[in-house]
Length: 317
Image (tube, rainbow, N blue to C red; front, side):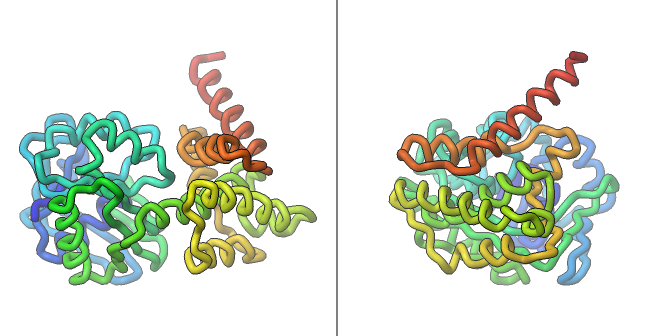
């Protein structure tokens, strides 16, 4: 099976490196600067599970601006605000039997992928890994979690879905926790519910979980936000399983915790965020279903106002 991975940053670089270790045929679609790093130094990964370097000869590299040929499976993990350019980049690589596994958060990207390539080519996917890319090109896994979940969606072609079983078999030869999920739509909603709650609260309050829980109303506001998200999922016919929500509940009940959503880190750095794709979209879905969105209204207003200010200041206003 030929696998194309768009990007070789924290997520694409880590999971791609593990797939190369498994013996899979991997090609990274990257920009010229990253391609030069990979050609010179290989793919260098620092991980709690053991540091490793994948030699340049073990994988292929193509310019993400001029992809040619088709692949069996494409792993896609851009930021949501870069989705349109990512779809343009992979378009030439989608052949008759290609399956695309997006690892973005939320749900809006599924509609965009299906509209562009057809439902037959689109699977679902989520991942959990704290990882970043250092300026020197080293992929750094910041904690032990390295979980990836993927599975067919309604409409995914059975021939394309067969590649998902091969992907799981490849990951089984690595330390990565990989799950071929039979109920992928529900799994996407479960991640959507937990992440939206964390992102909305930490961005709105500009603090960590521990900072928020140390206030008089923090725990109650966490509960209200999650309840609104759960009710929205239930209205969509995708009631989250408590086993999937439990890790999020524990995370958001950990007093003294320094955990924040990556969205807050982007916000405080003055960068664009995935707020529209996560918080804004959950709010819109809650309203459409007649659900009281609770603190989601304030969180989305906060994110929009911050982005308006960022754009105004960038324009010199």
